[in-house]
Image (cartoon, rainbow, N blue to C red; front, side, top):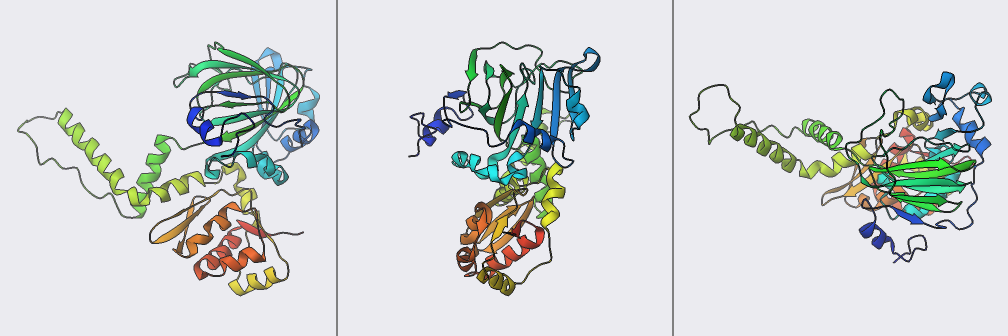
Amino acid sequence: MANFFNTGLSQQQFLEQYWQKKPLLIRQAFPDFVSPISPEELAGLACEDEIESRLIEECGQEGKAWQVTSGPLSEGDFACLPETHWTILVQDVDKHLPELQYLLDPFRFIPDWRRDDLMISYASEFGSVGPHTDSYDVFLLQAMGERRWQIGEGPIHEAQLVDGLGLQILAEFTADQTWDLQPGDMLYLPPHFAHHGVALNDCMTFSFGFRAPTQVEALDAVVNNLLEQQLGKAEYSDPDLLNKPGSEIDTHSVARLKQMLHQAVDDAEPILARVLGKIVTETKPSLTALATEAATELPEVDELTVLFEQGGILQRNPYFRFAWSSHAKNGQLYMAGEVYEVDMQGGKSLPLLTEQAILRDSDWQKILKNRSAATLLCQLIAEGAWFWSEG
């Protein structure tokens, strides 16, 4: 079994002992790590219109605590910064700079559809975003400089926050552990663990986030899919009704409603993979315009054959999320919150269509063995999910 960042743990042991359970500090997870992106390049990304970024100052204009400036940032924003106590954060760097996606490879033992993004922060000395909790799993890789992390004792599910701020900063925070991270060191944090990171000098931190849908998001998606599939039509019933005049909604009525809702979810079991696939592949609103730039006219299967024979290479669009599932009757590919079906034989091509970064002629020959899979790739090209490499 693969070693988990040279910790002596296997990947499965990490999942069993730490994943969503407790923090783990990993010294030199990436030995002798040198950041592949400079602070100046990160600042450049923060100035681009279609890239989500923030500037956080612990003491902003007129002494205002925790001032947040949403991107795109400008040269003027940087020109008036103090020497210390500020942070730049840029989201989805793995998508904007696909050449950095190799950094994701060590985490691929976790399903790709669980991954959110690579967020990169640059902090001046003493820069911080305050003590807070996150609702997702995160690996925090120190990429440059030093950062001191203070970690709370356990998860906090109902955090008390400081009022009136543009950030969710904890009103009270008590550290249980304190670690100073050097370049190459990495900290894993499960959801809801309070943490506070402070730059000991100018530093960069790479945050690999893994998100999951909330109960409300999942229930909303189940209801929408029940409506789409014309399921869930059973009505509230009370064949065990007792003689009890009046307008009271008693405990028996509530119990019947609860049972009816449980039955609706049970009835939805055949479409739950569909529900989950649509949720986890939805495109972030901030990335929609970039994701659809590669959309084109629907190509023919024979056209793809010619282009591949000429040495053409297809690249998977990094702005789209993909997932797939295979069942007794068919296979389903999920992309951008949509569902695309192939027959059972075509389901064998779904890993190629969702997990590989590029497709060459040898891959096309495998896909071409099934007409539904080949037709699906044509459709994905039209949607912009795959595009021809200019190189």
